[in-house]
Amino acid sequence: MLELKEVSVIYDPHTRFKKEALIGANLKIYEGERVAIIGRIGSGKSTLIEVISGLLKPTSGEVIIDNINITKEKIKRSDIVKKVSVVFQHPEMQFFAETVFEEIAYGARNIGIEEGKIKDAVLMALNDVGLDETYLEKSPFELSGGEKRRVAIASVIVMNPKYLILDEPTSNLDFGGKSSVISYLQERVARGRTLIFVTHDMDEAFMLSKRIIVINEGHIVFDGETERFFDDAELVERIGLEPPFFVKIKKTLSKCFPDFPSCEDYDSVVQYLLRKRSEYNG
Amino acid sequence: MAKFYFGQFQYTQTFFHKLNPTLKIVLIFYLVILLFFLKTIEAYFFFLVFGVFLIILSKLSFKSVVSSFKPIIFLLLFTLFFQLFFTPGTIVLDLKVLKITKEGLSLSIYIAIRLIILTILTFLLTSTTTTTDLALGFRNVILPFKIFKFPVEELSLMISISLQFVPILFEEADRIMKAQMARGADFESGNLFVRARSFLPVILPLILNAFNRADQLAMAMESRGFILGMKRTSYRVSKFGKNEALAIIFVLIFTLVLFVLEGIYA
Image 1 (cartoon, one colour):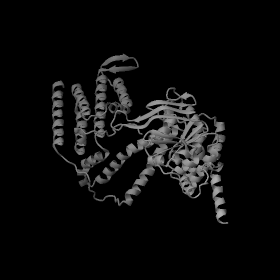
Image 2 (cartoon, rainbow over the protein chains, first blue to last red; image 1 turned 60 degrees about the vertical axis):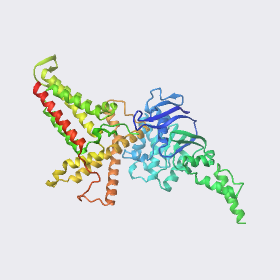
Image 3 (cartoon, helix red, strand yellow; image 1 turned 30 degrees about the vertical axis):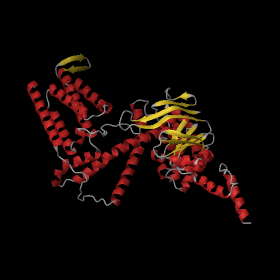
Image 4 (spheres, one colour; image 1 turned 90 degrees about the vertical axis):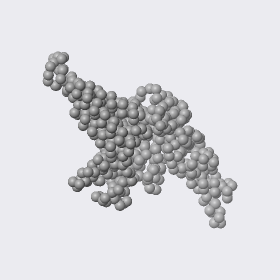
């Protein structure tokens, strides 16, 4: 379990540029959960993931990863990333190696995977993001946007972190790149892992998460089921977010069809729409 | 959020902040030259006190002043070591392998104070002047060279852009470092060689991104009609008023006192 106890982060304290990025955050994320962290730009989302992953020491409060208090105990970076790791926004901007293999192997070597086992680990990570071994010798800089993003995700999952954090995993991708990243995240990357992702895309948050954490001006203002959050139109609007397309459609259709199913289950919605179409067609 | 870096502009409204940037550059340059003409330790100490006084006057944060010395510590120690042990003269302390001489001791004190004063002056200039003002000031300083067909406008534009890139590059380096740390990179352990090597995955993407950024900037400038060598006008106008006159008088009095001290103690 990942736990945050009264965590606050203040940038530039004692100066006129003082900014409270996170204020008294309390949070528990359990194994196997799929959590979306949403909020407006500058709300404190990135600070939160930096704190969770141990990259930023909070001004006050405690961060506990699987009963290890990383704010109090001195833990090696390579040990933390085996538990929690982050794929940052535009991860392809951090590429440096000549080949895809070397790029992915970087993380594996850092955590001390034996040289003989690195190729298998790299291949497994590459397969998890839907790329095959023909990519190993390619330059990561020559790949398409979607492929680069998938290599970047592979370069983190090669360390097999228990909790995987993704910061805007589909930003700046075209439709094809976006859907391929989402589908591999859903089908393979999330398997057996806790997935935490930050997003501005409400459709993505709706599709990928079961739980939503909403941050506004450094405060956690909502922490609960995804659907419950989007059902509260007033709260969504107050925070300045837009409901996902699916929720908007559901609301519109629910006015016409009172028996419209819950949007928890996509298949039932599709079945419902198909049934309605055949009813109308006679 | 990026960490504080050496000489980063600190926003406060003081006499030094408001001073004409061109004059500020000229005065700092004058003080640097003046420093190299000093011969007595008393004058050096007076200069050091003057530098500290200017920092207090500019209301710069104490933490930033202390951190500004971090980059020069190695250089300072390195220079001190060589001056202290390898200057020939009257031996004061004989350590068999190494010998400390009277001349070496006094030379190392002179050099240490000189380096500290130089750091203070540079720190003062960049911490109290915005990058835009710094570029404008520099342009005005080199403007007379235009009569020798010196590319003043191009050079000042290059400097202005480079200065504005500094905080961006620092932020980007911070971002890349965090991203590589998320892949298990450790920048703090190991010997100097290992640590230097561990920075390769930070430096390479940083340079690559800087080139991409420069390329995009060049295209954006061209698309807004930038032509190399065209005559330019400036939105900011250099003003010369009471503050500037006061600053010149102040520096002249300081110079006079320095020469008096030099005369007394020489």
